[in-house]
Amino acid sequence: MASSDQPPSLCIVSPMALPLLAEEYGHRGAGGGELQAASLAKALARRGFRVSMVVNDYGQRDGTRWHGVTTFKAYRPDAGIPVLRFAHPRWTSTWAAMHRANADIYYINCHGMQVGQVALFAKTRRRKSVYRVTSDADCAPDTLIMRYWRDRKLFSYGLRRVDLVLAQTAEQQAALRRNFGRESLLTDSFVEPHGSPRPMAERDIDVLWVGNFRTLKRPELLLELARRLPQLRFHLIGGPAQESVRLYEAARSAAGALPNVRFHGLVPYHAVGKFYARARALVSTSAIEGMPNTYLQAWASGTPVVAFLDPDRSIASRGLGRAVSSLEEMHSAIVSLCADREAWGAASARCFEFARSRHDESRVIKTYVDALLALHVGADASQAGRASAPGVP
Image (tube, rainbow, N blue to C red; front, side, top):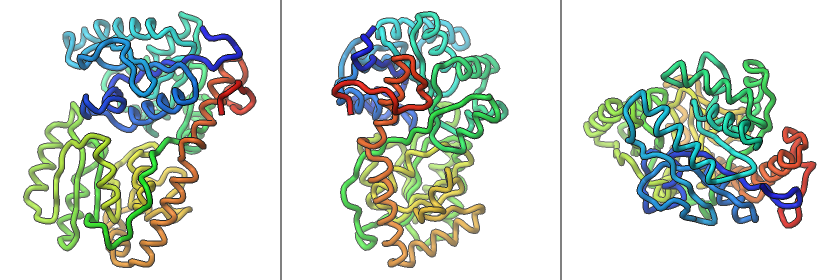
């Protein structure tokens, strides 16, 4: 373990995050949680922390480093016998990889049973553990998106026993306190800068939709909007979740019948940025989210967001697009936003400035650094900012 005058070592457990560290491994289903995990790992490594990640086995060598982050592989995604693989290889190989990492602090931002797995490992080794919420669904027992009773119980166990919980929004903080009696620290998300935003006239996508195809993302609503707005150009990006292949295929088929829709399917993260830069609006039809990475990436490109969900009223209070409550309102918001070049330009500038000032790495990382240092020296990490270490900004 590191001494108290050194930054603590951190192991981030994020099984599907390897493609976001190493582009050669493609996309492979990585989502927003994995993006934030990889961004945090790289940012801390740049600041002198010893950072490792536990990731799935995609054929890479164990202990390989990318961007200063050492990776330890657990299990192949398809390994083991259904039901029984919960214990072996998934549990056993994950713990073995965490043991090889030998970190002071173990961090997880996946939902599900692995929160309990990480908390239990840390407790038995007298190490610290951190959980960062990835979705509003994780903040109440009756909204947990987990198939098995076993997973819900392990998640609840972990949530109550990790040493620190990090929340994305004030709404999540309140829900965790109300539903689990758990305090949390508010942490912003990372977003990579996309350069100066393009003016509206240089953008050739009217409506962009990005996300994994899951029932709760409701891509069928986006396709209905495309039917109602044949004069606008719609682009859909995303791959199928494991349990939603039929939804994905149905959406692809429906999109193929609409001349104003282009269905891209799965696009690796490093190639998605150019689509945000080309879009006049990002539209989100999700029924539940946290603070979506798609919003942040759109704003970083100066692209307004039209959505049903408005975390902490960020869209409505700051003029970062339009927050709506029905499909009819969404229809009207898209039409008016795409038709008013002056209003769009003002919204685009606000989006870009918000992403630059609020979610820039140098600003976001300070809360994490302070919290990790406080946790390491035994201070109250929920009041981050009191601990410091030489050479760590």
